[in-house]
Length: 606
Image (cartoon, rainbow, N blue to C red):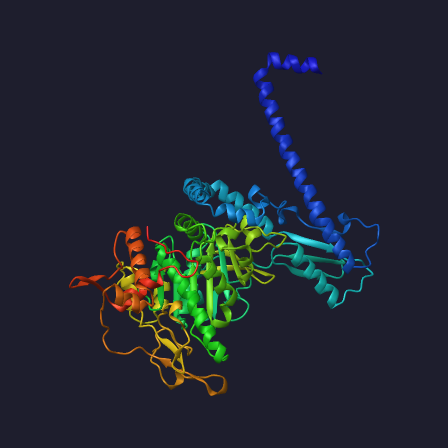
């Protein structure tokens, strides 16, 4: 044998190498298939059969799973993919990722991978690749799972429900049971697919019938409505949707519906600058694109939640207009926040940017105060979310074109379903229930028109700065007093457009009336007090400005100098009165709101 191999190598070296490489490739392919088959048999089929035997107690003791259970291999994923990153203790990982040079490296890596990912998406669009993916998808959708039944078994409703529940828990996707008592067999089949596309015209009337606290996502396998309820089990929503999966359309749909139904304020954190610009100028919607303004907006959102709990302390039945915080491209926002925080923080400051503390408190406490969060991730890592414990605070999770790692981190249940490549096709996970959904598609113009609801936009579509938009779109702040003493301290900042009463629509009047008075315990009255209508007076000089802001003169001067050093300009809105600097009260308050509070560093715009 050795002599024959040597002779072939000497005389037919090219053919020998070619055939050898082909045999090696086939051997590796067969080994991988055998490995997957063994994994499927040991980790899926045998455990399923053992569980089924407990339900069907009449199965003989010496029975083999081959005779009783049929589970197609392609229904299941292979073993869980664990990277080196997944093996590092979470606490150590969060500490390392908070280092400045690590954050810069991660941002650099994201920039380097942008082109390869675009190329991969282009390859997925090739006809041959699309044909293969669709073929695999059709095979998965037409697959059946069969369980043979003992002829002597007496299957009542309880046993049938337990067996159906077992399939739903162990096998990913939706299944419908078809019982054949003559053949002593139950076959589980996929339900019909959702519609291939759901346009705005298809569901507009259905959207109108939903309550103010519900939003339509799309249509399910039986063309039934798939909704989320911000007042019930889904006060916060997380999306993990890859490129082309319908993320922007889904966000447009949810935002447009909630604004039309009376949501008073939607705060959008948009690092991509243009993701949701169709809502520019829509009353009640604010879009923040600069990091320091995004941090301030998130902090203000959390402060409004705390203010509402102050009111609930005296009147537990108080109702509030809904506010929604939309965190678009959370992975990018997190990386930028970590990088900037590493550059400005001092040794005594925490490793994690304070903005994640504001998000965390809102997720934990926001539901009862009608404060909801919608977060969008490419992958919901602990770093991007601001902590491992925050993942479970999202009652609804929407996934489309997701990676195995995204499912593991966002949902974490096994078995893991396969991601559909169909445009707009998503899995909606609420609690332990997974449902296929064809998301409703709204164009930019449709979403804008629906959100405006016949109203005029606050500003033209041409770009306006955030400060100008706030000045034109937002009313003056309202303060709450009890027996002449302010409930909301100056340290909590000013919050725009507050109202204790539930508004009927987004454009409802905010004028204080007798209906704005709520009786607290023992008859304590908490009225709304509107600011005076007299024109504001300019504040002249550092001493007056420091007194107005509740600061010492030296502290105010140093804060002003640090701000000027980092940004290259003075406090926005500064003007001169004689030899002294002067400001309008609104400009000083806005500047103070962006200064560091306890444990918070000021962030300068880039």
